[in-house]
Image (cartoon, rainbow, N blue to C red; front, side, top):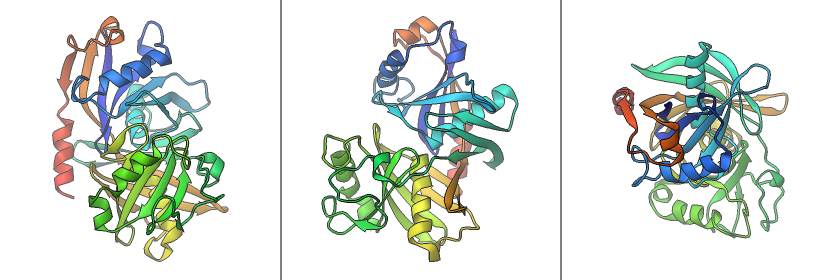
Length: 324
C-alpha cells in the first residue's frame, strides 16, 4: 500500500505522488497517463485536480528532493509555484527541516517554512527562478519582437498591452479593467494561444491582472495544459514582476505584493539585485486528503478501493479566505 496526498496552494489542486514509496519507480509515461485519469473532474479521484506532483530523491547538494509537475493533460510543466509550496511542506515534514532546496526541471530552488497564514493554514516561501525575457525562452514567433514589455501586439488584441516573462514557465501578462476579467477575452486568447498557432508554438500561460491598490493585485490565469485555474504560482510571480517594471509608482520594491486570485491570496517578494530580479512566492500549503491505495490498483487506474481521510484543513483554509 502507498499513500498519496491531495493538496492545494490557493485552491490550485494536485496529487502528490512520492516515487520513493514504491517498490520500483513508476515510468514517467505511465504517470502521464495516470494524470489524465486521476485528475478528471468527473471520473477521477476526489473531483480531480490540476495535475500530479511527482516527488523523487535528488542527488543535488542541499536538495531534500526533486519535483516533476505533470499537468492534467499529461504534459510536463517547467515549474509550478503553488505546487512547489505543497511539495516543500511534504519534504519539510518528512525530513524535519524548514530551510532547504528542491530540485526542479530548470533549477534548484530555495524554500522555507513561514508563519502560518491563519489557524491551521501552513505557509511556505519558494524561490521562482530562472527569470527570462528573451524570445527563445518561450518561444514566441512571428510577432516581430525580441522582447515584449508593456507592448501592443495587434495580432492578439487591438487594445491590450502585454509583457512576456518566463519564470521558467512562459507567461503573457496584461493589466486590464473589470470587463476584461469577466468577459470571454481571457478564455478566447488562452484557447487560441494553446492550440496550434503561429505566435506561441509551445503554448503560453495567459494572466490578466487588475491593479487594486499600491502593492495589491488581482490575477486570473488561463494555464497551459490546464485551462482556467484557481491560481497559478508562476503566473502571480511573473505578474508581480511585470507590476514592478511597468508601474514603479504603484509598486514599492521594499514591501511584499499582495496578490488575490480566484482561490485565495498569496504574497510575492520582488527584488532587483545587481541588475537581476529575484522573486519569492509565499502562500498556503494545504493538505486536504490522505489517500491509501495499493500499488497495483493505482497502476491499473482503479480508484474504487482507495481509503480516503479528510484532514479538515480545507475548512480552516476557507475560514481564512472568508476573512480576507
